[in-house]
Every structure is written in structure tokens, then in C-alpha cells.
Image (cartoon, rainbow, N blue to C red; front, side):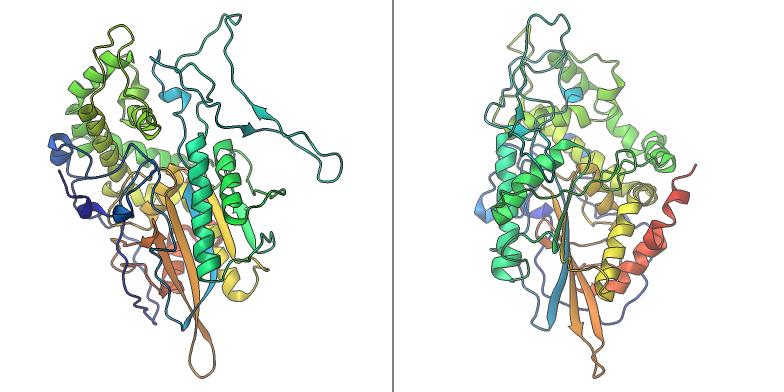
Length: 477
């Protein structure tokens, strides 16, 4: 088993600022070689590299370690402040939503126990900005024998998916920790919520709004209405949801290349698939379940994160998924995400096309801030999905790629430093992944610790163009 120390999300490093901006190469650079992307170790190891899959709670002495159920994020106790000559002027956060039930498509044909969510209320209502207030209403799922049509999966009162009560609590704590750093410690965020200074954005998937509501309350104790920005379904850049056939083809081609480690990992996993299918009842010819380990990963990890037992065969309760089998699924899932988003040489081009619009938006936010054209905004917070974070990590060419777990967080901090006698300010950017400095395999980006913002902007521009003008062309086949 690989030591937990061997695969950290990052390390806290001293501030080393480069004053001369250099254009960063847009070549693809391979990630570090670790147990995650070594197929022999994936197939023959035990455990999951010290990663946590069974609790939102990470022991304090291990904080920063990968926790699928509740990933590490910026906290006051670990945060490293910039030297005094640097002034923080802007923050942009992008995070994955917090833990949830599985998607309906990731449940077994028949599940052996019910999953109830009576301890969480998912609010669904509308009201006019000016006029009568609405009653606070929430959905409560129920089953009835009077409906002759039944769906597969879990019985009970949960929706699939939905952010669970524990996931909502994790969301609140996440917001509280951010406020402790950027208000209590740095005095950067306003004491009270100011919609002119702080902007929150979600995707069209309601689970991101469920997280955002709790996160904002954790930050500000805000009970009044708060706008959540959302783009139209079908063109949303945050999810991302816009059509990009070229990226789809690149991702598919990476998985279909003969003699690739992707093909090898599926070939070497056939016995595991047979064992899991025999327990779950999933048909062996169901390509959605057997083209990757995504479905089994989501199903098994969601159970363990919520302290539920691993599944057993409904007809033979003596046949159950073992922890060893679940761990192998988790190792294979980590391998798949590393392969798709970093190890495949086409991963950078695929992710750039698929997530390039959001990258263009981020770059423009930096430019507007430096030019004083962003109004009073100083903080943006995006609640997104694992696909969003994976593509961003791919574009930044992170040195060790993992499957972004629940609540995964990347923070961009823009700093200003006074320049020479003329007083021209210099701007620098720091990127935090899981609350720690991110490392890139791209040698021109390297340790993303107070690098000239122009270095990052020229890299983004070369990939997607200013204001993402290159992306429509990149998406064409």
C-alpha cells in the first residue's frame, strides 16, 4: 500500500515571486508517475493510497489528504498569508458540489435496502421580487403501490441525485471556513453579504444550488434572498454544457486507441466486472456500466460516504461486494480520471475545447480587475461538477491527477504589488488546490505560487483566445 504522504494534493511552499512574465508553452506535459497511473500497481495493490472513502471527517493530522467524501479546502489553520508587499485584490473560486446520493443511472436494477432522506428538505418555490411572499415548500418523494410503473434502484424518500443532509452540512462548513480565511484572517471579504462585491454562480443542475444556499449561509448567516447566476441550459460554460463534438471525439479516441493502457485496464478488469455483475444484477452487456468504472464507483462510494453497507445480492445475501473489491474499483476510477484528463496526450486539447469558454471568462475577470472595469466585484464563487474541475486541472496540467471528490476546490488569488518609482503596479496570481499551492507539469507554469498574471493570461490566450474567441473553432470537427 502506498503511504498517504506519497500522494498529497499539494504542499505548502514559501512565496517565490517571479517579476518577469514569460509566455508559457501550450504543449502537453505528462503528469508525474505515481501509483495512480501505474496500471500494474492499480491492479495488484491493496487499499486506496491512504485516501478516505467512508467519512466526511478527515483527522486533523491528515488534513490535506484526499477524502472523496469531503475534499480538503482552504482553512484558517493551514492558510499561508502572502508577504506584506502583496495586496490581495480579487478571488475566484470554483468547487465541486458536496456529497450526494448516486445518480439514478448509477443504481442497480434492484437495490437491497431503502435510502431515506427525511433529514433534508430540498426547497422548490418561486416568488415575485416585489409582491406577496411564497410559502417555503420542499419536495418529499414517496412511493405508491397504485402506480403500476416502477423504476429501478433504491426505494425510499431520496431523490437520485440529491445533496444529502451530511452534504449540506459539509457545504455550510466549507462556506464558514472560506469566510474565516478571507474575512476574519485577511479582512478581504465584507463582514456582511454585499451582492455588489460577491457573486455566486451555479449550473442548471439543482444540486449546485442546494450547495450554494448552504455555503452562503455558512459564510454570512444570510437568510434573505441571494441571486445565483446561471447560464442557459445547453450553452452553460460552467458545467460545461455547450456542444463540442471535437472534444467528444478526442476523449473517445483516447479511450479507443489500440494497445493503450485504457484498453488494457478494461481487459484486465473483466473478472472484477463478472464478480460485481453477479452481485448487482447489472447485465454484462450494458455498455454504460462496462465502458468505465464510473457507475460502480459512484454507487459504491456514495454508500460508504453515508455509512451504508456495501451491497449484497438480493437473492443470495451471502454474496456481497467486499471492501477489497470496492477498493479496486476506486483505484481503477482514479486511474481512469488520470488517463482521460492528464495521461492521454490529447487530454489538453480535449479539455481546452470543452472548458475553454469558462477559461476565457476567468481570464477576462483578471483583465477587468487590473483595468478597474469590474465594478465593485472582488469575489466570485462557482459551484460546479467533477467534470468542470477535471477539465480545469487538465488545462492547468496538474502534476498529479485525481478524480475530484466531493467539495473539491480550486482558488485563484490575484495580487497587486507596487512596482518601480513610477508606481506602476505588478499583478501576480496564486492557485490553490485543496487549500495548498498547485503544481503544474508545464515547466513554464511550475509551482503556481505568485507567478506574473501575464504568464497565465498568455497561456490561456494561446489556448482559447481572448474572450474564448477560439473555442467555437476548436469544437468543430
